[in-house]
Amino acid sequence: MRAFECDDGGLRVVFGTGTLARLGEELDRLGGRRALVLSTPRRGELVSRVVAGLGGAAAGVFDGAVMHTPVEVTEAALARAAELGADSVVSAGGGTTTGLGKAVAHRLGVPHVVLPTTYAGSEVTPVLGETSGGRKTTTTDPAIRPDTVIYDVSLTMGLPWPVTVTSAVNSMAHAVEALYAPGRTGATDRMATGSIAALATGLRRLPGDPEEARAELLYGAYLAGLCLGAVGMGLHHKLCHTLGGSFGLPHAPLHTVVLPYAMDYNAPAAPDAMRAVADALGVADAPAGLQRFARSLGAPADLAGLGFDAADVDRAAGLATQRPYPNPRPVTRDGVADLLRRALTGQSIGGPR
Ligand code: NAD
Image (cartoon, rainbow, N blue to C red):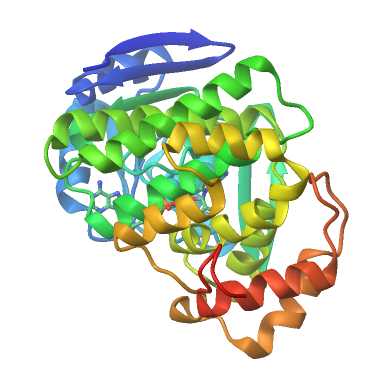
């Protein structure tokens, strides 16, 4: 099993099993004495373990985190922090909880410790996506990045299978887009392929060897998060940003359905990246192989099943192409609309169009 700790340019990472036991000491290192503990609803057992781990340094709990960080929820959490006199934030959960933790800690200028329980990767990025009035905006600022991340594999053991699969593919998306990002380096390429291989291995091994598999998955998620924080993302992330923020589609399932189509769109313009993804996944063709692999694990296959409507295709394509951004293949409104129509019905990649 992998276990390590490192300090990397202001980000401290503690990785292993049972590392929740380090929480009190890690918060103390940052000067936190009264932590506000954040979670999504119905994670009582996790919250109790975190509060116990904090001992006297737990000021109180706010368990109302909501996906895509709506500003009104952030305001409610800030009010709770003020009521408790909190001087630090501990986020225990997936990307939803980490997003709220970033929003609160950044506004208050207090230390932030994250205990990730999914594979979202947000815990190591300086990026915060927030929604207000049905629009999602993204802020990038080094001060948004949490101070310390405690990866405890044991906190992920109970992650339900469907969330495990979609969360792992969401994580792969960061690594895939890093392989054709303009700012990529040899180091980010290595992190990206290492991440994809670890995530694929973790998913394949999960039924037989859950502890080792969960360690692989969490490690792969950490590497993918580093990729996401290091380089800009392309078509896949911009499109999912629009579909999540403006159409309310669930984050990780959405990424899981869209990723093979976004890869298929970019494949002619990024053959080396696709070869690297295929090798890391152990498949012949990256877009088709990833789609088949995810479907073999029971992943959602089409956007219609996530609540996306055919009548919204043109509006979504318009919103997703409003502003230009770097992408290996030029992003056109017609091209995105075609991609969305294929994803809507879950057309097989490599099969009849
Ligand atoms: P999530 O945090 O909403 O978790 C999904 C569900 O699983 C929730 O109901 C949660 O309560 C539950 N859950 C989480 N961990 C569990 C566990 N170990 N056992 C049982 N249940 C568990 O979903 P997510 O996909 O992790 O995060 C999505 C959010 O993260 C989105 O808002 C997205 O925008 C954001 N995100 C941000 C970044 C970034 O860098 N800013 C990166 C990735 C994702």
